[in-house]
Image (spheres, rainbow, N blue to C red):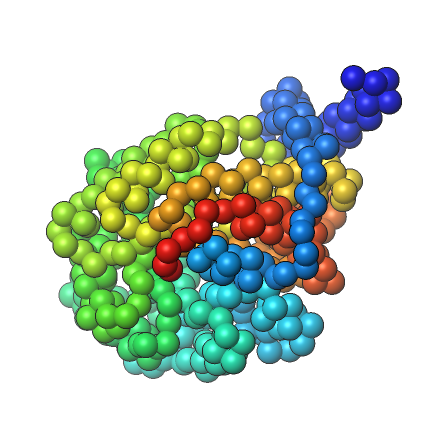
Length: 391
């Protein structure tokens, strides 16, 4: 290695450690652990993220029988023409965030589809698949829920909700996250189920019920169980993988009409415990159940990386490429969905702010809707992916 090369590498690694002292309290890690987690990213220093041509991500994915999409909300899509244009250009699927209980059920006896209908119409006009998130979740419940829903009426509310919402979009929607985040091993149940109001009111039978009602209401929609924390080689993610796989096995054994697993894939730019083999094995186990797989909420958090933008973009891109190179090798994976397209409209600042106050850069496009290295990484992964025979 040349002296110049050694000096460059040294500066890169020193840069990675520059923010460590200021971030220790936020990250909750010791200095040695923090620096170790950052130094590993030096392997992205010289990676080539060059892409061939300027085809948008939706076209690159479609060329391999895949779908690429992102979550998009009513307000920015309806008010920012540049964003809407970028979304329609890059995405072959639009996931509506306006379909949670909190947004569409303002009172126990009413539904409001105004915003989600606008988003669905935009998707159709732009030639995009439309996807719903989410029918059953323990979060984003309306204010009236706690005082109104109980053991006696919970099933009625749940069935009515699914029939009304799924029925409203029947024949128009690609897939539903029917059930979201129903697993939490730390809650201490032998079956790994999360302690939610639905479990408390209805018992574990609600897991089967919600899929059956959705399937009866719209037989054409792909029905998905969606969850997080399956990506890394650590005890927490391993426990979640085991519990989720067992849940899917139980549902399949009952004949529950669950068609796919949604893997959220909220990734960490400073993580050192990504194990390609572990993830490949898990994907293969899911596929062996006859299930499709969607990566449903992909993003890469860069809040614990140093401030240098070029460095951050390179590391984030490397994490995208490494992850996608694994999951796209599995034929059962049919869609890649990012939880945000542009850094201008991101959920992350509220939940993972940087300690230095700088803007986050977790998504494929920057705040001006220009492609970043993360876009290149995704384009390269789609270009190299094996061809799918169907969606």
